[in-house]
Length: 403
Ligand SMILES: [Ca+2]
Image 1 (spheres, rainbow, N blue to C red):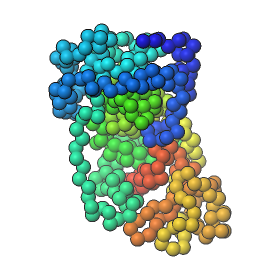
Image 2: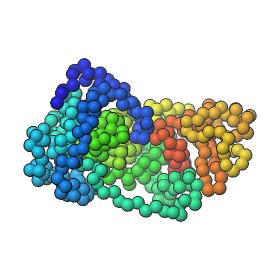
Image 3: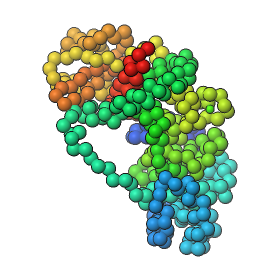
Image 4: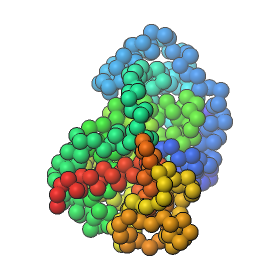
């Protein structure tokens, strides 16, 4: 195995630090031009089928429960070691990723670049599970939903009575922290409350998979976005060392997103803050999450002088097809009014260019103006419906609080 040269290493570290810091894990334009990572991948492109050398009884034992895996795995190494080829034992890597040369190169890299200890990394990755072998619960589709509009179906997943109640309780419990975030970063409480409600239903759904399993599987087994996930794996290890959290215990989404705001590891390193000043930046702590989300928006261009995010617009007809819509669009309000007779339904104080937002409902399209800060919300997740769900949930909770 070749160790990376120092110059290469330094340049790759610079590249890593300059890499995209977007939160959204489905963005296609993530910068993956990391030369070292590229060299690791090309060296190992034919070596990724590690599961093929694992005895079949292994997978059936290890995939029985994903939720309890962090407890169960402690004894797996010894019981499996007799089934693993000698050279793999010498390499120090057993389990689902035994014999994966890309992972071995990655471990070498983490050791030489950041002085992680070999034995710690080999232990961590020997206990990592291939998520492709885990059994997913079967999802039943509700055919009745099909009668409604696209927006109605999407909105229903986040803006529902129980979630609104959770949002009201969350706001009451963390009112001081939300106000402090507003003062510090200029982001009003309703949008942070909206984000946390959409992302995790206020901590109800933190995610049921071990982050190490998700990131290792996606980074090392030939996922479509393996370069991106290799970077996230690297940042995840740095994050756990910085925060003192146990890399083998942290749980997250199917994409490795973590905590109340579902930050990926790179977002943790770039935007997370210790907002309750207890010395640990902890995404599973609501106060730290509130400050971190506000900081994320602030750093992504939130304008504290623009309080309005979205305003309903008036147009002629029931379905809107005249102009392109979506968070990427930008129109002069003057031109929309003069040329297309599209006007806000209530007073809009923001005078800059607006995005046209179309919400497809059962019998008509709602049209909205999105301000600069609406576009900032969509940096969290590049989706028009996502931004409107955050806005709608936050506004609904705010109104229902009654003050
Ligand atoms: Ca903290």
